[in-house]
Length: 416
Ligand code: GLU
Image (cartoon, rainbow, N blue to C red; front, side, top):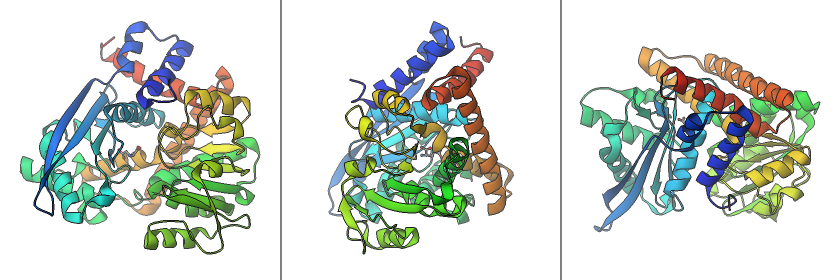
């Protein structure tokens, strides 16, 4: 059953950690549920003159450690349970990298590929009109996620500032640079993941610069991972890439920069010169050293986990592996770098963006990279050491680190 519903999966993962930690029943129950959530409709005037009603959500999962933080996803399959799960994972993510923020998430059920720029702008502004009064730098701070962009963040900030009547750039992150965005936010999710791969490769004594790697999902995180893997690890062979339309493989290696350019120009990876087609599911089972699941949740399940051959799975997507699959991968000796640690680079630089907005003083790219590296490396070390000490799989270790921190904040506040 947990193979099906992401929120049930998130609860099941927490239950496992609560048991291992001996968490008291009240704290456990509190952390199993969002503290509050909003469901709303967003009427949008479409280009053809008709009005369409979209459904939106914002879940504020837990704010014990600070204002809730997390992206807004635009996806045709969005449901309240996917948003709840993602908001829970944001709570653990911010705690894992030890930034003073809680967890939240938003979503709109829509297919952005079918919307014009004008329709997207009206939808973004409508979202803020519906829920903006619940947002703000001290309450809840959105950011980009699947199919949302810096431009969408700019429209949302503008709508918010128009409503409140003053400048308030820290109400949202992932903004374009001229509107108070941070240097280094664009590639931060992938960069943080590659820093984790670097640390994991040291532990496993893998020469990351010579390792082969494959990327499932070629949105923001996947595209940057393709090039950053080589840049940060000093080499490596990219053998396969896929997106929602299909994948491509070349055993001799794919030019990472060229395929990113091709994707940006054509909107797909299919047909990239010198490659043969491969399906998303076959890509996951390739015999590569490092796999980057970078698309959506629920792609590595009990049905295919036994066939996964990578030595390291670096989860740039949120929720790609089900609990049943986790156990299988662990027993096979595959080191999983769990989503809420491996992809925490995005929210970490979002946090830097908020800090810079508050100070109205902006850092250099080198400063951002250095601070991000420190946070990611510390998070990896804390999780890896817990794994060794408690003899558990990496995701459970990450949960133990994060849940301990959130539970402590709840206790100090006198909630439990
Ligand atoms: N949507 C990203 C995530 O899942 C970033 C969140 C943020 O920057 O607040 O981590």
